[in-house]
Structures are given as structure tokens and as C-alpha cells.
Figure 1 (cartoon, rainbow, N blue to C red):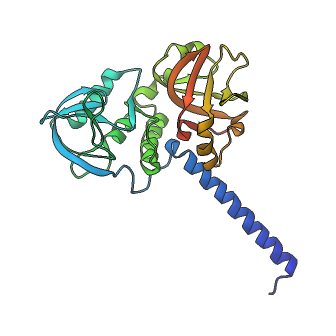
Figure 2: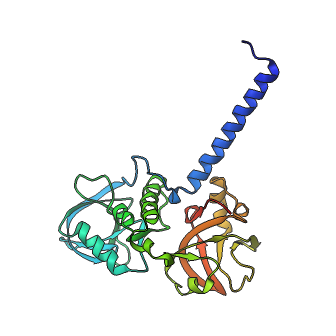
Figure 3: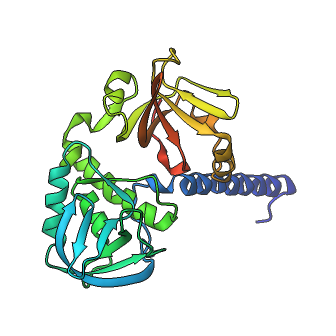
Amino acid sequence: MMLSQGADTNGMRRVDQNRHSSHIAVMLICGLAVMATTPANAAGCIFEPQGEGRVAAVIDARSFRLDDGREVRLAGIVPSATDKANGAAALSSIVTGRDVTLRGDDDAPDRYGRQSAFVFLPGSETTVQSELLRRGEALVSTEMAVKDCAAELAAAEAEARRAKRGTWADPAAIKNAESPGDILAGIGRFSVVEGKVLSVRQAGATTYLNFGRNWTRDFAVTISRRMMPAFEAAGLLPKSFENRRIRVRGYVEARGGPRIDVLRVGQIEVLGGN
């Protein structure tokens, strides 16, 4: 049956609209890849090899010493602030006495002499970081810019959060944006905060996502002007967060009220519902 010109035009318009919607969805997914809740693709955290060794001792919740004296710091995660002792014990149970392979972008030591790396056990394509996250003994950090790796880590954390494992068994693991006093109690710590953005305002070179009406007391997220190209590339404008529930992670600062600076788009996850 031959379609009329009008029907054909309408069909083409619907296809274009669907393509446009799909394009927006892809941009949103790319912009928020670090907060993905679905499994990463096979690429994951496979970086360049940085060497191998046997773990002699665990130093803390995200670092250990190899038997040749090198100290390794697990990239892409931060210890849970609620119970670092459990994190160290979990790491020890996974790696102590085991041979490990190190991978990463750069094997140069940090100022403390530690090599930052993603760590793999023999025969495994999953990072030690992902295992700690899956147990709820760590949090995804804000430092990871590689999309596939960020998605792998985020999926592992989301699994633990849904199952309320480890740190996620504590309701206080996620701070309520409407309780600025509780957030300020963790000043200087890496925290995860959830709440509804009441307003978005710009002052000079800074955009504020405000979670309360008292700007000098309530919690806010700050985004500098230099971050705007990254948000635009992800198909997001800070104004779009207004009246939306979001989850944000980062280090808490006190500037009147508690603040978290956003240095990567992936620090913000848009949650379902208002």
C-alpha cells in the first residue's frame, strides 16, 4: 500500500523526534556515567600495565605494601568515613599474601611515595576496587574521568547500596540535604548527600544549587564557570536541576553553610521523582 505524502512526512518527523530524544538520552548517560547503575561494558578499568607484585601488608582501607617495598594506593575509590577499620579488614581479606597486577595511566608515585593503580587478582578481569565497592566498604571517588571505568565502579557501589551492605546498612551513610548540621559534622570528609534543589542561582563566576532558602546556613552545591563546558557537553545545564532530587558526592567544606564543590559532572546523579 502506498503512503500519502502527508503520512510519509509525519512518519519522518516522528523518526527525527525519536532520534533527537535518543541523542539527548545518550548525552545524559555520558554526562552521568560515573553514577551509572548498570554494568559497565567489557572495557572497564583496563589501563596500561604498571607492574606486578605480592601483597605483604595492608596499610589502611585503600593502600597496601608489596613485598618489594612499593606502596600502592587504590585509585578511583575513597574509604567509607563511617568505618575505615572494616574497610582495611576487607581489603586485607582480598589481597594479603596474593599476587596482584597493577594497571593505570601513570605509575609515578604521589607525594607520599604511593603508586596509584587499579588492582587485579590473577585470572580476574574485575578490580579489587569493584569488590570493595560491592561489599559496601568503599565509595566511588570523584577522580575518575574514564567513562567505562567510572561506570564499572558506580555499578558495584549501586549494587551494595541497593542491598544495604557495609556502610550502606547505616541510614546516615547518605546525608539529608535538609539537615545542614549533620552535613557540617563531616567537614573535610568525603560525603554523599541527597535532596531536592530548591533554586539555582549564579553569583559572579559561581553557580549555586541551593537546597534551602537560607543561603548562609543551608547546604549548597557550587559549580564554577570553568565547569560549564563539561556540563554543556553532557547535555546538561545546571538550571535543569531546579526542583529535581539529586545525589551529590564530594568533600564537605564550610562557607557559611556546608558546601560541596563540583569538579566533575559525574559528581551529580539525578534521581527519579521530584
